[in-house]
Amino acid sequence: MGKNSVSLRGRNVLALEDFSAEEIRLVLETAKGMKDIIHRDIKKVPALRGKSIVTLFYEPSTRTRTSFELAGKYLGADVVNITAGTSSIVKGESLRDTLYTVEAMGVDAIVMRHKAEGAAAYASKVVKPVILNAGDGAHAHPSQGLLNLFTIQQHKGHLEGLKVAILGDVLHSRVARSDIQGMRKMGMEVHIAGPGTLLPRFLSEEPGVVLHDRIEDAIEGADVIEVLRIQLERMKGGLFPTTREYARVFGLNRERLGLARKDVLVLHPGPMNKGWEISPEVAYCGNSAIQEEVQNGVAVRMALFTLVLTGGRQE
Ligand code: CP
Image (cartoon, rainbow, N blue to C red):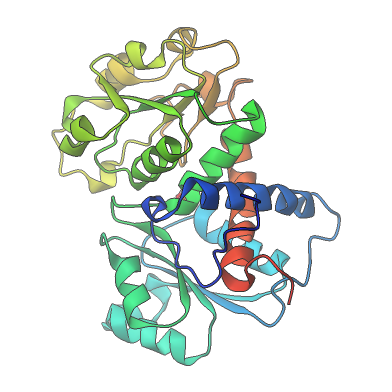
């Protein structure tokens, strides 16, 4: 089928499990053109002129919130940001009432991050604007999954058949869940390793996912390594002895990187705990695409806005 045979117009972006491989390809293809816009002197096109977008963040963010905001602005939309700490949420306004309030202002899309799994899906049921999930608890972070796929495709030229090693705190990681869904749909081989206490039970039943006790076995021959952040803020404690011990047994360092393919691509969703899950020298080595992921995040989010708000055609 041709690349225009699918349309995402009007679609909520809640989780990559809702996307077909063809829909993912459409987003990645559209993002390529968007990346060119980011490199122009004047980063402004009128594709979303007249559209309005609200980002509604109940949890902290640097990359996701800023890149969604810039994505909307580069495309000519009006973008307004609401963060929990500086809104009427601190006066006790409920999620439902906050959503009704934003909807009443006539917005076309709401980008939402919330600590509760399913919050974005709930929002999509109670209000009419398109909902883009910017992270809901440990459930999903679909735009991060897409930007990871985009970054890998830009470097490797394809996705199918590549071996990816996902390392670390999968238990608390919405990024890992979106990665696994997206990567499997695109025919990648997914290998996972980390402390047993940080590997959720669903992984052992996940089709196409290979679990390893030692991270060295997951890394062996990998085309891509994605290191996950240790999410201390979501842990009640006791899930691993010390961060020093974690680094010794599960951290990605130069020596372990040497087990992967020479042209291995290193990813990390950020922010990094350098010296814990990843050594500083690996974070900034020639194989690292961690900064590039951030830039690609803008391009992918521009693609998502364009596709869900206009179907990809200028109005
Ligand atoms: N990757 C990611 O979600 O980063 P932020 O928390 O800074 O948005």
